[in-house]
Image (cartoon, rainbow, N blue to C red; front, side, top):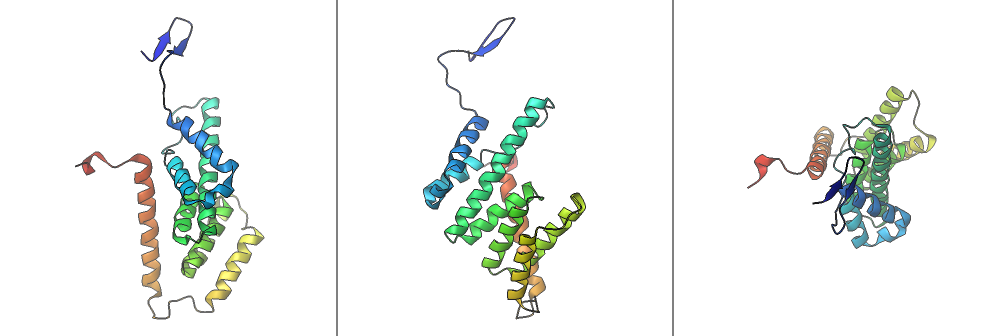
Length: 209
């Protein structure tokens, strides 16, 4: 038996080892965030990505006790910080596609996090998707206005201005297919969110062979 119980207490039985995903996630994320410079190594980035995959849902989301709420928010913050550091690391080594994917996940999980929006704008621009970068700024601008009643930070607006300047007066594709390009990018974003959801929750039973 894994548990020993009496009328007064419950404890783990001696001689048994348990693996708890929340504990493993906590330990691995703290280790990665303590030395982000190690993420220049592709193996370390892979380990962090695996650790982030352990975060599938909010911790004890149906429990309304204060202690659970504090733990839930702490683990969520670790998840966001880990995603952001992984995106930054991918930027530093020039993996802009991967950086774009992780930055999108940050913005999806916490739309009010401006550094995530700036990172996604930068990744879009470096991938050649300047129209999407400008659109991301407008999304940031909208959510900040709706939820907080504030404007984006000066550094976010400065990044927008720089990307807009580089895009020129016309923001359409030179071949006249600007709308189609934008639709393609939006579909890619939706598919990335679906992949992220599947990675958290696992495949549906119907998909099993």
